[in-house]
Amino acid sequence: MSGKPKLHYFNGRGRMEPIRWLLAAAGVEFEESYLEKKEDLTKLQKDGSLLFQQVPMVEIDGMKLVQTRAIANYIATKYNLYGKDLKERALIDMYVEGLFDLNELLMMHVVQPADQKQQHFANMMDKAENRYFPVFEKVLKDHGKDFLVGNQLSRADVQLLEIILMAEEYKPDILAKFPLLQSFKARISNIPTIKKFLQPGSQRKPPTREEDIAKAIKIFRS
Ligand code: P9H
Image 1 (cartoon, rainbow, N blue to C red):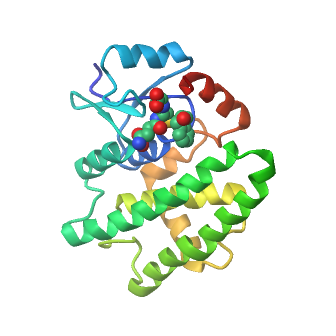
Image 2: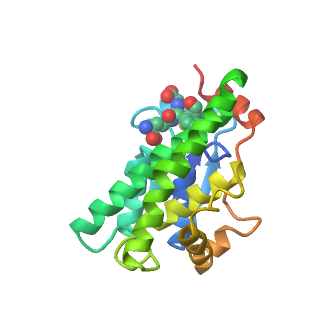
């Protein structure tokens, strides 16, 4: 065991990507074991590695953690990305859960049936531009600080940057009406650990394509 966390998932974003971002932002090197075929999943299910028979699973500190949010909570707490007290954590949790909801919309677009893609696209862009991004623009405007909570980097900043970049893959000018989010994006992208993760060749995964979904379905569909 190299002592490095080991991530078990398929070679794509899906539910593991927020965890890759958190570890990268914390400057933690990690290994990945990719599920390529159904047998790779059933092997982990049979040897008791998956509490709920599902991935993401992360081997860290002698544990086999499952459930995306549970894994993210452990990493954020361990690497001091979760605020300095209960009230800061409450703010961070609200922001992060809102971002997970938007992430679900953005993540699921690729699996929408062709006749629903346009309607789904309109809805996810509407939610991004009129429900979620205005909240974070106002948070930055109201306190005038560099980070969303506590004037220091937290998992909320990391996840907001992840989601901004994902939304821009769908609509490159989506931040046109959000000047503070534009400067936030530049500022957080220049943090050395995150800048390294944004470099080509990092463990950050590319946008999910139709053929990636077809492969995932073969692994996960019983
Ligand atoms: N609450 C991939 C991309 C987007 C959304 C879901 C799945 C849920 C957590 C095997 N794991 C397609 O279905 C793949 C979860 C974890 C949990 C799994 C089974 C899924 C996907 C693979 N399915 O947040 O961790 O849905 O292991 O037997 O259920 S991820």
